[in-house]
Every structure is written in structure tokens, then in C-alpha cells.
Length: 549
Image (cartoon, rainbow, N blue to C red; front, top):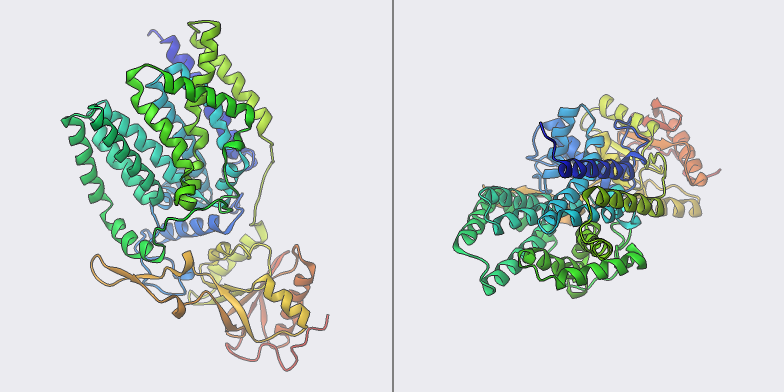
């Protein structure tokens, strides 16, 4: 069998690219291990929010309802969150044998890499050599600090939405080229944006609308293409109907889409700006844009159109799209890669008009290695907010306490990012550091105390009122933060060490006070102590609540 030399060179290039992206994307921070003893490299509450929701789906086998332990104890809160990432993480967990907390982060990183490969396919329609030379810029996905942080801070739905947006672009290009399978793919991928991260749907719809209008004006859209688009729209609506109703009646009511200018955002660890690429790369990108837009080729109309869109969409925060524009920017290293490849290829053709594929491969890999060496700082294993002792404690509570138990967490470094405490799979409540600091200043422990219960997503406690009708409970009826009776819990968790020694001392003082009131130690390890309350609403502090250490 004769091997196509050009295909072999391209395959080798792509395999090296995938390996490099996996290394800088997750292998280094995961300690080059694919399985871990606890949620690894989780650096914010949102990561645990997604992980605990996915674990709930695996445990129950469906997503009809949200878990009671992060829904104020309610058992009829409908599953209202975009479901795709959680579902595929559960499926991958079953197939691979890995824990959900590993599969969900691994999939998020892997889909970002696959998103780059899909965009590579789009660029190959323009020029295969340019596509190969575009790969090095995609490494910025994991070297721009704001982009890298998004993976470890839990901006997973936004990243998933961007993946489906890229896939939608590829499917739309196939519609433009009258591919017979285009309707299927366009339907699946647009539905993916709806069920993955609806903000991506907005950008997808805007671009498709923009594309249709321009192609009609330029007479580049015929009846067959329009029929494919219409059929895909109808099928997408049918597939996504259930979640569209939830989105319309719950999300849009609580978080109505408002146009407002936003110039700062810390939700992803900071804003990705064009300056994030560095001025030398910006110069190269500018050259690439000029060459692309000045090309006289009529068959790259789609690429020119998206080139304009990719730049403009990322700056729509200045015209009212707020944080959604910043979500779009997560994929700028992928979207802008076409400009980079174009510029490098233009420079090469000035030197030699017909550069061989082997030369293109070597130049691409050389630039890729150089950019990684220049921009990527190896971190080594990042265990994150969780640790083996806290994970052991949470699993003990999950497996050894009655399902209706109420768990209270005093100070611990992990608990401030309180999505983590959902792993006890019991209704959890905690104190906040600011209140404990005030307590230390007053030197007096009060029984009725400010507390925060874990209620995910801003209190969207939605429930069904009809076959396809939903509403939410009044937030004031189920406030996450309120003054509660500290003696009204079943179990209490104390950390014996932490970043703030005065607060760990306070933990020890309160635990000893409880023990004097017949509380019992039911579990402990090197970091944690779990106490059981013998009498709910009893006098857990005794007669003297003065802090005397």
C-alpha cells in the first residue's frame, strides 16, 4: 500500500501538536497522572459546582432534579443547568473507570484541543500549509495566563460553548459547500451551544444571520443551501425544546439579558486582551489579517467573513455584551491562528515560492517549540483547594451519616470556596472568615450566628408547575446567607491547621467547648475533627461563651 507522503507529514505534525497541547494543558499540572485520589487542580468554587452536579447525575442516573444538598434540602428543584458537560463526563467516567472529578476537567481540556483541530480543518479549506503553520499560535490557549486560569477556575461551560461554536462554524462551512451531511452536523452543534453554554448560541446565531444576509446580497446562497439551514433550525429547536423552555422561564427571568458595557472581569482570572499575545505576535497577526483580507481568492469568502467576526465579537463588551465577549475571547488563540499562519506562509513564499510539506512541518514545530519555551512556565503538580485529608473526611460524612443530616463547617482553607462542601452529599452550612474575624475581635462566641448555606447558582430553586412550565421559589424564602442557630446542626467539621492560625485556634476552642457539652468525636484525621451533636438545639456552648485563648 502506497503511503501519501503529504498526509503522513501532516499526521505527524498534528500528533506532535496534540501531545504538546496535552502536556502544557493538563499533564504538567496533573503531575503526569490521569487518575487522582481527590479533585485535583481545582482552584475555585465553580470547579466543585460542576463536579458535584456531575457526580449527582452519575449517582442518580438522571438529571431530572438538582441535588437536595445544594438546593436548600429541597428535592423537587428541577435540573436547570446546561447539561452536556456533566452528562459526557459521567459517560466518560463509566467508560474509562476514572472518577467524575478527573473526567470533567480532562474533557474540558481535551475538547479545547479538539476545538483547535476542528478550526484546523476550517483553515485547510483555505490552505493546508497555512493550517499547519497556524498550529503554533493555538498553544496560547494554555500559555496566556487568563486563558489557562479559566480551566482551573471552572469556566468550563463557557469553554464548552466555544468548542461547539467552532464546530458550528465547520458545519456551516459544509452547508456553504453543499455537503449532504451538513444538516445533521449543524443541528447537533448548534444544539450543543444551547445545551452547553447558551451565550455561545448568541454568537453562533449572530454569525449565521450575518453570513446569510451577506451571502444573499452577494448572491452566494442558493435554494439548496437555504433549505439546509431551515431544516437544521427546525431540528435544533425540536432537540433543544425542553432546555429552551427552562432557559426561557428560569434563566431569562432571573438573569435577563441586558446590554451594558463591561471593561473589567475577574470571573475567568482576568481579561484576555490582544496585548496578551505580546506585541511581536500582534505585529505578525496584523500582517496576516492584511494578507488574508487582500487575497483575491473568491473561494475563501467564509474565512474572510469569520476573520472580521472573530475580531469584532471579542470587543462587543464595549457595545453591551458584557462578560459574554470575554467568554468568546477564550478561543482567540484558536480564532486568530489563521492570521498567524497566513503571515508566516506569506513570508516563506517571499523566500521560496513553493515550500515543501516537510519544510512547513519543521518550521511549524520549530515555532511551536519556541513559543512554548518562551511563554509556558512549568508548574509541576497543582493539588489545588482539596487535599487528601479533607477528601477523606467528606467521604466519611457521605458514607456514615444519615441522609437528612445537617453538616456545619467551621473555618477551613477549602471551605471558603464552598462548592467543595457539596461533596459531603448532605445539606452543608459554613461560617465565613469575615464573621470569624469579627468574633475574635469581640472575644465572644454567639449562638445565633451569620452563616452561609450551600445553594448553588444564586438561589435558582426552580420547580415544575406544568408539563412545560416552570417557576422559582422566592429567594427570601430560602436565603443562603442568614443568622442561624449554631446548635441546630447534626455534625460539625473543624480544621486543626490552616493559613490563618488564630482561626484554627478558634476552631480548637469551639470544638473543646462542644466536647464539654457531651458532643462526641466521631471521626478525625491529621487535619480534621468531626463532632456529633447529642441534642439538636441544645445548649452547645454552655453558660460561658467568652473566648479565652
